[in-house]
Image (cartoon, rainbow, N blue to C red):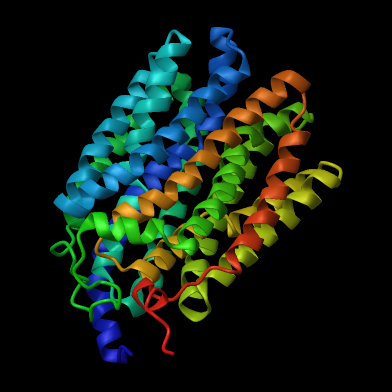
Length: 415
């Protein structure tokens, strides 16, 4: 057990990298959070169906997930700071490509493929992997939760900032300004240099961090039932968040709400996420993380059910967004810490990348189905129903996860 003076010293050493990690994620995820605000101006100006933009965002989420195991592997082998710096530059290029898109193919390339890969370098998998190595086990939830909370502040600021940029510069100018912001955030990458691969910031080695070749560690994880349950549960998370972030503004406008309500709703999610992400990280230090995750998914399902069942009002929208914000990105530090708890931090970038792939497959389906179902039915009701059902399923999947360190869980039982 870490003593109080040792814990205080560990936290002091973690302050700068945790702050910078939060800032990088805040800009990266903040830009991702507001991309739904570009759907209507872009599709109206170009005369594209809503599904075109939805497919580009869906591909972005898929590329994010598919690239995450690879960028996590690169971070495990050559250091996460280099991966973050490269990703920030690539993100800026993707936003510039999106601004200049004159055909759906170019939009899909910039918004979908390029930004998707860039996000895999600048968001949860790589950044949380760096912090997981730097932080001792006793401080890991604190560091991940605080970085996520700082990232949430960036997401909150991104909503009114993007709206102001659109009003002042137009949607194209706003995209270019956001591209410059993420490129500048890449200058923080040197502060995220982690210790040598396989070390844990001076903490006692994790019980599952005995030397293993990466191929063996990945095979061990893929043979673990809990690893697959985490993947399936995270798929539900991706579906819910991507659908709401991308389609909530259009859903509210279709229901007759003023545009400012959509903006304030996204801002409310981002503001509540600041508290929710930190709280989830800390709760994961106090209670079993798998149970906290199950409770999060149950609460999400309940919130969405009430939202779609009740008459639309400004108060209802803000209450829904506040509750969802509290439950928004708290799943990421919880899931990352649970993977570290079960399989150690030596290959956390690679292993969390594999789990995150499930999240992004769900995100692809959430964004794309939202646009597809709307174009076919002129309603989002079916997609809301799917999101609620997936929340209930995810809660059920987390209860049976064996969250003991894998070396213990897989050891022969004494006879």
